[in-house]
Image (cartoon, rainbow, N blue to C red; front, side, top):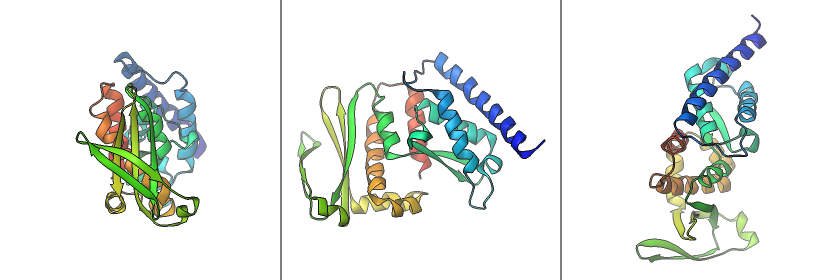
Length: 234
């Protein structure tokens, strides 16, 4: 059997595994977004995976275990993510394939939670005016003023806001030192150094997500998939 045929055979088997697991989870109550096409997302994922190589230059589809590939793809579908929309990406670690979310992916996932109306994050640059207070034991944003030229200055922090359906805004703040401490524990340091603004947003929005989703009333299946992807980074 040629390499191309082997690849097509492996893709079909893994896709069948994912679809079977997905059918079982739907029977258990999992609901995917109405505008989400799982088949298209899986095709997009395999297109990315065909180009992905591990640190030794071997194709990830050959070096990573079938189980880890299927689990990563299942977590992707459960969260309603698509690589084509740069909402997630795959990283091989030894024989394990892991799914990581982008900033945009975490935004999309959190908006699926029943109590979330919106979520966003911003970077605080040197020279910005940033002020917050503790109101009733909860951090509350007062103001953030910035200028265009500040975007070329050092990042001094970042914050994320989760807006609930009751219009309550939940603030999560991280200083530059806290962000760098988080980065020091992560596996994707090269990406963080190359795209510090997006990665700072991603770091603080992941912290906000972790604080929020574990107190939500949403499906345990969705929450577990979100936590899996967050933990993969570390």
